[in-house]
Length: 172
Image 1 (cartoon, rainbow, N blue to C red):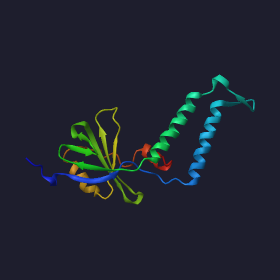
Image 2: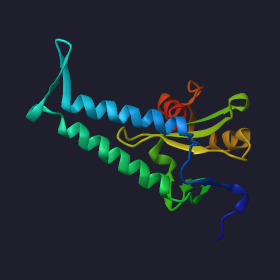
Image 3: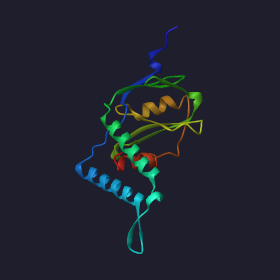
Image 4: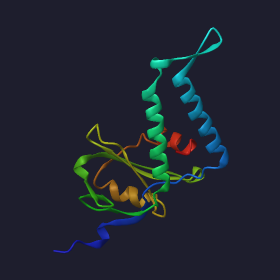
């Protein structure tokens, strides 16, 4: 038996957001990395620079290097377009299907003056991350009215999460 296609909402989103970083951003980021590396090997004692030797923080240097490598690899990856499909049993994001049984609630945040138009799904499993989906050209009210039939709505969420705000401000 074929599914009624009117029971589905579909749109396309980019796989990741590529922030616009200018020359100033790279200079500031480079200075922060250099300062962190410096203080991993040196400290100040009685207003003199002291080398830490074997007490240097090598793990922190490793974390900084790995973070830089991950950022470079991530920035070099092309942005793919992913299909989003909301249906009566759950939603599909690219190749992964999420049943509504796995989802605790949803929230639609629409603030046109701030260019915010996001859909959030909160998982019932505490170790699963929140799923954030940009609505792009979809009507926020249509998506909300569709999902409210299947899930509880989180009416207390009226702003984007702090982690996403920081990511946007820091251009990460």
